[in-house]
Length: 78
Image (cartoon, rainbow, N blue to C red; front, side, top):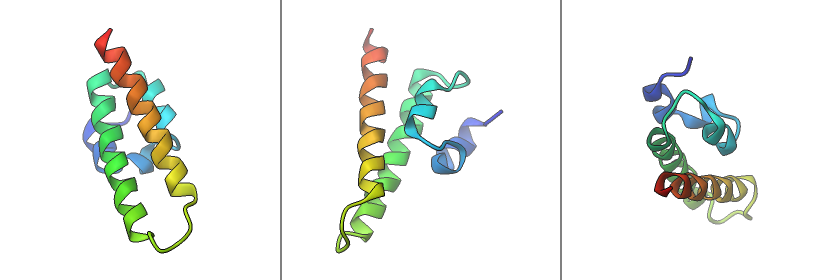
């Protein structure tokens, strides 16, 4: 079982896709949002570091993370 602290410190190391975070049965919606926000922060930093290169996989990953965050935010407000 994945511990919350581990998932927060290295979300990409425990989940292949942001959708896996959304589908995870271990964590609450609030915990999933925390994990995805930190993953988004890491993806944004990487994107800035690679700013001079063409957009690629990391940009797609950031979009997927944001989409999953939106899904969880909607679920949270229900």
